[in-house]
Length: 228
Image (tube, rainbow, N blue to C red; front, side, top):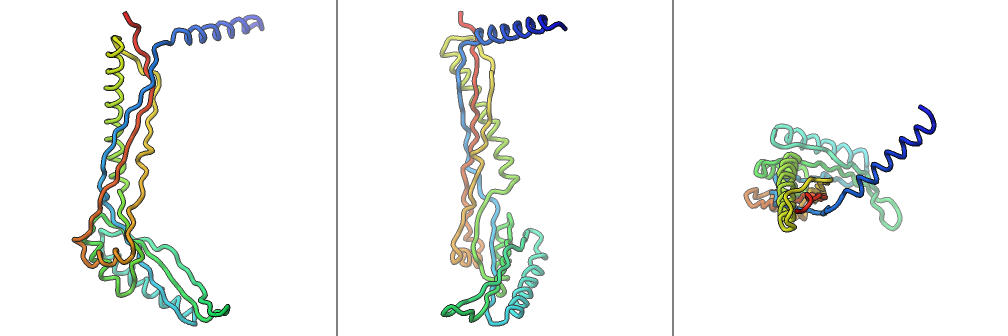
C-alpha cells in the first residue's frame, strides 16, 4: 500500500466519523433507580476470652484452654460458622512499671438461625464474654437483591424512555449507551453494644434484625427516532 493511498484512506475514515457524528441528534440522558428494603438475615456475635496475671505463659495457656473449649462446643452446632480473630498479649502498667499482663483472644460466630446462635452464646458465656453483636445481609441475599433491582431499574429506565419519546411525539428510540450502578448495595452491619448483646443472647426470641435499603441506578442515553 503506497504512502499516498494510506493518507487518503485515513482521511476518508476521519471524514466518515465526522459525518456520522453530525448525523447524531435528538439524544436524551436519562436515569432510573430501583430500591428495596432487604431484611438482615445474618447474626454475628464476637466473644472474647481474657485473663490477667503476672505470668504471661500461664495466662496464654488459660486463654487457649478456654478458647479450645469454646471451639469444641461451637463445632457441634452445624448452623453456626466460627472464626478466631485477634490474639493480644499486653502489659499492664502501674506508675510506669509493668505490674501484670493481659492476654485476650476473640472469636466471631455467625448464623442465619438467630435462636440457635443465641442459645449457643448463652452456653459459651461461662468461658467467654460478649464483645458485640451485629446484624447483616448475607451474600446470597445481597446477590438476589442486586439481580432483582437491576431488572426493576432497567424496566423503569425503559418506561421513562418511552415516556420521553412519546412526549416529544416520536415513534421510538435506540439505546446509545448505559451504565448500571450497584453502589447502593453497599451496606453497614447493624452493631449493638456489648451489654445489649449479652441481654439478647440470654433471650433469643427478643432479637430484632431489622433491614437495610439497597438501590440500583441505571444511567444512559437514548437517541429518538426522527420526527415527522
